[in-house]
Image 1 (cartoon, rainbow, N blue to C red):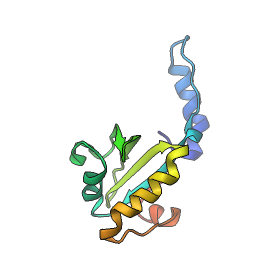
Image 2: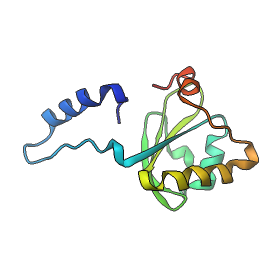
Image 3: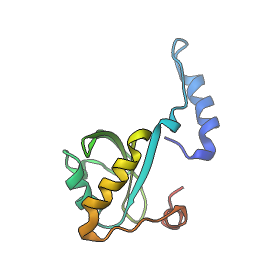
Image 4: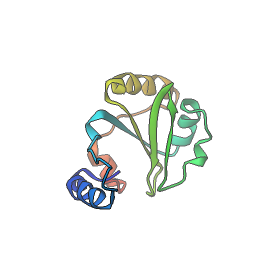
Length: 122
């Protein structure tokens, strides 16, 4: 996982480190990403995944199912709780809509890049 601006540099570094028979491919376009942000992220995750959200430590990732969809979760090390979720692009809309339905009791609010950057995400 790398910031968009560093993809080419990261792919080059990974390619150099990979065994000769390995093929390195940028697969970022096959994922939809949704960042969950705020003090109740773990409460929401507790409704969405079958493992304890506290297992996902800052700076780590977890492959699991979210809403019965294969997902990759990454918890960022930031002042506010941020968990990035990655699902297959073709399921992105379903996951987005289902997240909002499930989170409705805590009044979810969609935010853009500016809000995430203000919290230190990049």
